[in-house]
Length: 410
Image (cartoon, rainbow, N blue to C red; front, top):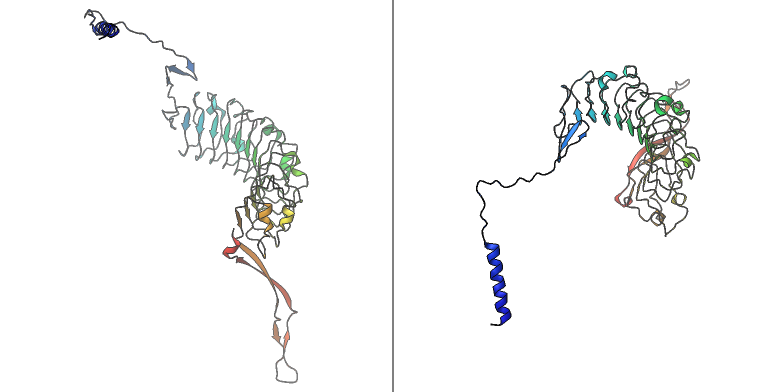
């Protein structure tokens, strides 16, 4: 055994002896306590202790506030007729599906933290809403007032508001004092009201610089709403009385991505009125259109069902083909028209990404001459009763639907 090996063994034995020896501790001596730092600070009337939060569980007796999230107060579907007092810490207030008739300022005296209020499906009238009751809520982001009996938009509203739902009411006008502060509003729902063209005079909508979506379906409008903001991305106008679209109507809304004008009275649209670089969805179903129009490259879904197309000229829809930047159209719906044949095969060249062309049933018009109706005439000198036409022959137009064979589906 070499000298180096003997030295290594001695070193290992020495270390084992040092590490393995016992240290005698006085049994009467307690081990020292290690004190970890703690902290606390107030946030929204609650106290943080380490990673835990303690909040006061104050909640209206008529409602329920989940212990896991005490910021929400659920008062929905409880047959309430008045709004209970809202505690200071509540951020989300749910009062839908009740019988509430008024919005009183006294219910919100302490409600300074509210970010969302849902008062839909109640019986609220405009005359029973206290003046400026919502304007004092400086943190309010969402306000739901659909399915009530409002005749006007509550005024004024807080400038912090981002989403405002007023559908299914009796609103017939939009006042400047109600809409002027909505600079941060991104979504406005006014479907199923009584709005006419006069409601949008005075550049009511143009002032909403952040508006991205506006729903105006099921109203009484005869023309497209005027002065839309450039920020708009979705416009819904279904089920109105609109009969035309101005040539340069969308010039001031270059960011529009979705346009829905179904169930109106359109008979023709300007050829390049939809030439928008961002448009992805276009719904023109249930109108009286007969002529094709230009399809922008960005469009992906096109709805032309329930119109009066006899022939859909693909060359007009796509006058040129650019293989470097092809059209993005993937779906066309053209059922319930008067098409006599499927679209030209050029549709697959012009729209190489097309996945489905839905032809469905087509309206077929059949013309024929109705046979004359004869009526007997009393004879004068003979017993033979002659029959003479009661009216001239009439060209009759009969319309029925026809379902194309499977070869029509792509």
